[in-house]
Length: 35
Image (tube, rainbow, N blue to C red; front, side, top):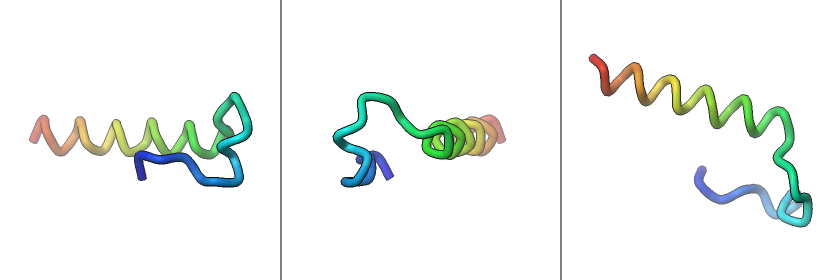
């Protein structure tokens, strides 16, 4: 989950979906840690 997909490795910017998933996982991890 840490490495970006191979098809988007040649793109300088992350896709909106990747950014959403990344922020979502960060939010979930922070929530789990806070509990």
